[in-house]
Amino acid sequence: MPLVRIAVPRHLDDTHVKHIADAIHESMVTTFNVPADDRFQVVTRHADSELVWAPTYLGIPHTSSIVFVQITCNEGRTVEMKKALFARLASSIAHGGAVLASDVIVSLVEVKKENWSFGNGVAQYAA
Amino acid sequence: MPLVRIAVPRHLDDTHVKHIADAIHESMVTTFNVPADDRFQVVTRHADSELVWAPTYLGIPHTSSIVFVQITCNEGRTVEMKKALFARLASSIAHGGAVLASDVIVSLVEVKKENWSFGNGVAQYAA
Amino acid sequence: MPLVRIAVPRHLDDTHVKHIADAIHESMVTTFNVPADDRFQVVTRHADSELVWAPTYLGIPHTSSIVFVQITCNEGRTVEMKKALFARLASSIAHGGAVLASDVIVSLVEVKKENWSFGNGVAQYAA
Image (cartoon, rainbow over all chains, first blue to last red; front, side, top):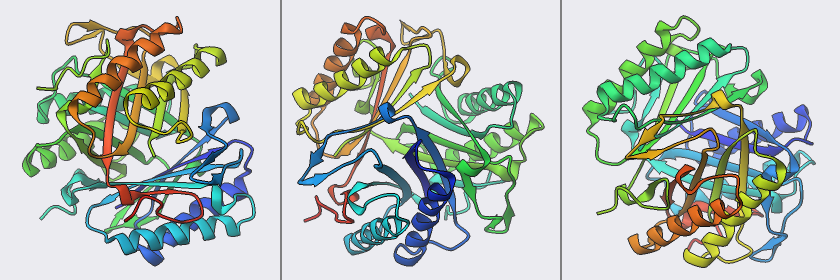
């Protein structure tokens, strides 16, 4: 169900990008109650000038290896689940060695269950 | 009013991509109460590694010709309208011959009417 | 906190794209209560065929220099703030000379405060 948009700097190589996508999915399965085969991710790769950020926000510095993760998902997860997801995402991505935990920027967009179709023109989650 | 993001694999040629964009718009006009000239679509084309999906989800298999459609639209459509949109989207896109109905993945993001500007800095739908 | 997605035609040069991104951020700081160092923008550049629009909608004509701005932000801004943002966005972008105010298309996606992480795996805005 989640649709995950992952914007990464072009200088990250294929292996690192794959690690990031895998880490995000694993984090969602582990902390966010997402089935292992419920994986839909769209990666965009960007020139440095196409990812724009301030040097520091809320005391956290950012570098040119910043990664933006935006997850569209069903509404209803608790704040605790969201916190667990964010923590896991940052640590899993950082484990790959190319991106710092401080450079993992995440946002969630919550939608109704009836707002999805996973193929064949059916709203699989609608009541 | 809808903003439609269409992510397609790079191996689809221009003719097929145009068919997909046209099919999506026609489906929205037909089933979702969208005016014919209310068309705002952003297409991104992706290397195979940039669209990530599991082989099967909910019993529906996916292939490298998968297409992700994300529609930001006004809140308030009924579940029946959403079901009609999904059905029409999948069949219209599949009619073009390059993408299977099983590979049409759709999500809707609903927003308030006041959240749009269609040019000139005006919130045209605000009360 | 806002995540700003900016889709621009590929024929706009780097200087104009930078002006657009700067104008958007300045508009948000001025009218939308966004801190100056709260800047997270993702730019995508598109071939002409990848940005699709009708010649006119609501009496406003569009050209091949159309720009799509989608802002994910916290819920709760007033309609007046949204109107002020739209007005400022269109005039600031147009001031750069490459894009007409009539070609600035904006949508807002509002989310809960707890839905953000700005690095280090923490939900910085959660209560």
